[in-house]
Length: 352
Length: 262
Ligand SMILES: Nc1ncnc2c1ncn2[C@@H]1O[C@H](COP(=O)(O)OP(=O)(O)OP(=O)(O)O)[C@@H](O)[C@H]1O
Ligand SMILES: [Mg+2]
Image (tube, rainbow over all chains, first blue to last red; front, side):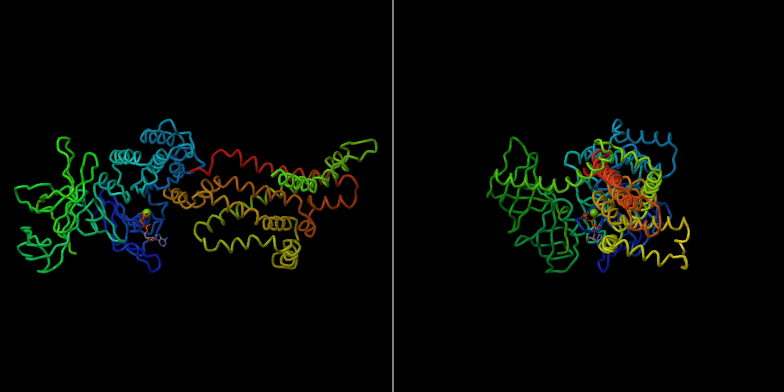
């Protein structure tokens, strides 16, 4: 059994079912992100794990112990909030030492641990400041240190970086990951930022309307999305309408253009299906082996720096593709007839 | 433009005179005890009067106890109402305002009826009982001021997040209240406390009807029996009240951490 085991968890507020049959096992030391749009229930699941919300049904086990009914202050779970929630009347040192003081730890022991934590978050000289004398990024580091000082079994972070500006967000997320690895602490990280989730996590849980749509490594989530929602929510995606011609042989038609996918597809002849493909899997020009080649013409060109995003009209539908910028080759002009190719393995078929 | 300015200045001056003239008159009168010019003789007599010292000391002690009791009642109540039962807020606010609506004489007659010597709880029968009754009565009188200021203080901090942060670090309710909530609303608690102090020091109706020798009845007795000393006493009481107000300002200004910025 997993270290943190969430078992058929359900939560309703009145008639509103906010979390539906949520199941998840997290191994010791694993870093798992909850990714999903606003209102999908990420915070609610996290708060049930923390003990701030009582599940309508289901169970939560940590290290084999059922904590579903345990009060929040007995769970040994560290929590970091979006709004930092540092105690404004206490100094940085006192904030970090709060949990130890509550636990009845001795003065010297506490001071030692606090100094250790200040070192860990890279703020060894700011111990005597008050929270209002710190920047947002520093406050969030202190909040992290405060949560970790008591050596919790599980660390929960609810959009800890959303209140910070972009630069600090990136550096702090790397730091959080480093600290998490160093301490080997089991962690759940809530975010609605896919880049954050994909870059930091061992596994990502993509949530949608209270359901865990897909649980997998960032690689799996991005390259093999299990549902249409996951495919659309994670990364940029081209969605093309197509008709199924022969399910067994894998023949479909994109507008008037027949396409052979060389694999068995679900569904029946005449079904409308969606083809999903990532912009970076589409190449400009004809590629030789195992590729589907489509003819069209350039509709838009967006120069993004190292990457050029080009939109091509194919069979009456727009396909975005990314190519790297090359100083010796300027991008084609709008209206130029082109061919694009994509490997048939990268054409994902989603039920429409 | 200048005309408008003139009028507003005139209004300020008139208002100022309206408040200050009686005070000046009273102060002036309190200094004239001796025929041959101004002196602080009336103040000397009042301040060295054993009865003054005794009743004033008693009232100060009672005021401090009232403040402690008020904090114990109001801070947890306001906190839980905000945190868990926001729907109850209008009701609780209404209840705390009742002492302003119901005259103290009605309240104290109610007390006497309920707690008289032939009742189940004959508090008025003993010295301890009477004092406790007075303490509880004063705590009631302080409710409107205490509740308002504490509630305002709670609004400036994110009590939900702070509570959850403290809980996740292992703290229980009493600890959360004592080391997270109370220090953060301390300035507001103080402003409620000083108002309470000012009220309790001069209170007459409760004390007189419960037959307690506190500062209020002493002032009234003085007013009925002496000429110059009551004015001196009034000035002293006035200074105490204003000192309380000044202390509120002082504590608000010089609190160590700002709860406003976040
Ligand atoms: N205490 C509550 N009472 C009623 N409804 C609630 C309560 N808390 C959350 N909800 C509802 O539950 C749903 C999920 O909320 P939740 O906060 O878990 O979303 P989220 O995924 O964290 O969103 P966000 O990214 O915006 O933080 C929302 O529709 C919200 O309105
Ligand atoms: Mg949320």
